Length: 118
Length: 112
Image (tube, rainbow over the protein chains, first blue to last red):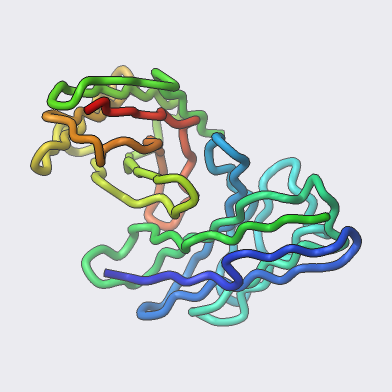
């Protein structure tokens, strides 16, 4: 099946720094990638939708200047948390959909990135 | 926008019994309904999905039913096993490349 990877899996940073998270589709071209945020024991909250080569569409309440999303190629999207603060600590998960074997429109999830801001 | 509700939030069953999780959605344009299983600290895994032109789908011990008129769908797990313990999320989506909206989740515990 289709594989989506994320890097890093865990990151700890100081308050005020910026953190970049990468999401890659390893064996298919991802026309659309999604970024989710998940708090402990909570559901996945969609942050933004990104299509290759165009600006991301952010969900209501998500600060686009704080969560910078770039989808520069059909296999890579990045989420940069700028000037991170402790309240940004969370589990960030990406998903990708595109021309994958077996199903053209199934969303495949990355393993997630645990961000801890001190 | 789409809103997905899910019940119950927690569910405990004895091993071998059945588990049922119910979801409702608000947008009648939604036509794809996946179910995900998420173990602690792991990514969500698609376990079954159903499209609006189908009323029921089964895969071994897992089945999903959909009532488009009432805008609700359900997950049924039979002969539950301890390894079925996890958080289950229902979700809804409109078009093929549209965003998936998740329900709040159900924490299922299967007691040996």
